[in-house]
Amino acid sequence: MAIPSSLQRTVSAPSAILLVVSGIIGSGVFKKIAPMAENLHSARLVLLCWAIAGVISLIGALCTAELAAMMPGSGGEFVYFKKIYGRFFSFLFGWANLVVMRTATIAALSFVFAESFNNLFPLPVIGSISISIKLLASGLIILLSYVNHRGVVFSEKLSRYVIIMIILVIAGFVVSGLSSPLGTSSNLIQDSGSPEGWLLLSAIFTSMLSAFWGYEGWSNIGYIGEEIKNPQRNLPLALGVGTLIVMALYLALNAVYLYVTPIQDLAAMYFLQNKIAAVEVSRLISGNTGAIILSALILFTTFNCTNSSLLMSARIFYAMARDGLFIKSAGEIHPQYKTPSRAILFQGIWSIVLVWSGSFDQLTDLLIFAAFIFYGSTALGVILLRRKEPDAPRPFKVVLYPVLPAFFALFCLTLIIITIVQRPLQSTIGLGLIALGVPVYFYFVRQSSKKQA
Image (cartoon, rainbow, N blue to C red):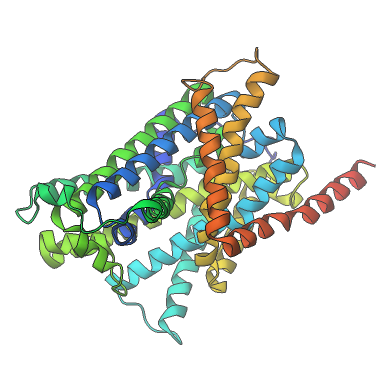
């Protein structure tokens, strides 16, 4: 059987939109309300942080959409950065995704899935409950890696049906919450002693990082650009519409939390062990049945987000291998299933290693910091490419150019600087992990040179 030289375009526009939604909605929107309430002590500020983070994420999505429509290949930013900044920077992007960003996200999501499963259906204790949870998390990664190995169409259909079910359950929760007699509109404007001055700015910054973790994943659709039908139209459409749908769902969910529960009660939940604020709010609305439904919802969102992350992220390592900057076999396409099966395998193995290392929580703390280095580079790349190739075909152009790309790039730079100042140890570790890719890059470059010689 002949091995295909490229991946097939099988993903339609509606499917791409739902993949964007699937790649974003994980556990963050259900868990972050408590720490945000504790930081801000103001319902209005909590909603404002979610709204601002959503708008900024949308601006980032629009910037990415311009480049994605111009260069709709596998690997997303890896492809864009290679054209704009060169192979070295594009490799660092891929390396950061391998060691910090995507694999740590997969490990964290699968672990939250296993924890949620254990809360609903207690697992048999094997040595300790932590071992049982890690075994289930590893099993989920193996299962979904196999699903993605079998084909993008099957995996995309699984993700599509699950995310539609998730959206319907969220809509039902929102309706029941806003119609609950326990709720009061006065809760939405309640302030139980929010900080002032610089403390307020610091609290808003910290809370926005929590919100950005909830929005993380909007750029993933670009990784499968080679497999999207009519990508010049459908990639920008998926990025914009998908991000808007998530914004609406997140604001509605947080409005329910704050409508039903006073801000000080939500803040108090931050100090409760093994309690998820969204589940406790649902328990108030509908008793134990509501808590079970919300717990099941978190189970399905983490399952679906893990699947979407595995599906899309493996294409980065596939693109790196095709460019001679990763293990050669990762660039091979399965002759029967037409998938980058080896890249999926390598990604799954490293994600499982992170599950068992127990380091993924620390790595995901670095994820937003690392991600915004490359998000900012994407926005700056829009400006640089407009100047370098002003007449190049652009099926989609970001609106309000150059204001929006410049604003987003400056925002990312500001966030990076503030993070370095406020969290120097974490920032140093994050930059150090990325820097470890430098000798790896030169190793692969030497290997490629030897083969060509």
